[in-house]
Image (cartoon, helix red, strand yellow):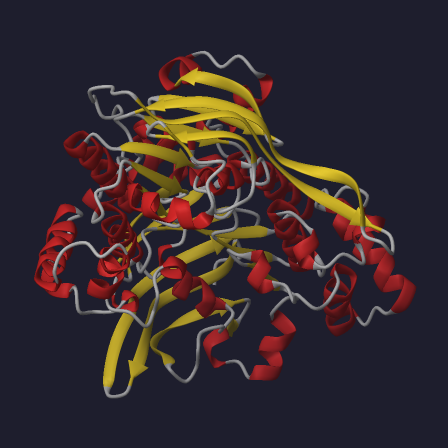
Length: 536
């Protein structure tokens, strides 16, 4: 084994068994991870990135998974042949891992101190005050503000970025030689992503550890990686230095990935009368304290927002998590109580009861962030797409069936698949089903709440092009909520930047992107589009 290499993977293959069926998901994968470097594994969902990385720590669902061939050398040992006791000494100690979604990786019932202390006790034998001191050092190391106040916090009491920092602190507790980061910033805002990336680079330089980064976000990879392995259908199709790969990609699949950034201009539609008008909209949540639960203050989630959205246009609403974007969308759809005027197609909504609003819901549809979570697993696609038709009693059963088939064709899905269930589709296909469900009612307004954030870049581009073509064809009006500014730029005619419930900048999207005025807007754009080179 080359002394510069920390890990050597040779001819790795992984198979999953389901009954009598055997599916090979990784085939003939070979690469090295050098000491102190960052290696990125990139590719679309299902390419085998995470399975390859999880194989290093043997975290696959055995016995459903097996390694029919290959070696993973660490030191002078093959990780695939080590006993469970030896693997426990390596996991979390010499090789650590941070996962994509910290909320599901952290125990919701235990405070932060207990979760980090557990690792220190298990691997270092630290207890009591010594463990607490080390925990505080780690929280300070990863940039948690006032760490002594966070020790007793439960995961749900922290922001997404803070939870990811806690995960990094846990991974670094024993100063590992290798940190495996599995999509560590996918669920985070662009500004938080940038901070987490800078943190990882600083920690890597300080501790001299190697970093294996699994990602489908090539902008992120370009910022941090030294070398890149591109995976497609379980194989590595290209392997090169980061600079070389981005300058002159050799494999057609790599070229497709690099060209998958959502681009183009918003649909060039005929601008109609205002579909949606909002004046001084407020959503304040009371903070109650004391025995009598008196209101002592308010969380001003949405605070005095105004805009007018014409027919055929897209209003992009951007801002970090907690800025009030989704709350604003739910208030406009009357799914949350609010104060202020909301007019939809000239009708005043804010004084109507839920029963009075219900007939108008046919004209106001929504597509959510997570297509898997928003589609019922017990209903087939035909039932999901046709649910609105049945609720609003539109057409006969035969006419409803024809409308469902037409909607599926519109979004590029084979109508013959309408009797399948959501789990039988990919993420991009599930989002197309969600769009078909909204489209089948022929609405005037569609609220798109982070509809592409859970998707690969290539699939994002397809969904953006689909949304653009549908808007052009039907002169649709979109309210587009996102923290992905590349997608917002490709779809939006108008742009609204929201921070802590208030609008800090608003105007024509092209003008705001070209010449942002507010420091917060400048910060968002810099985090999204500025791409520094990786550290030496």
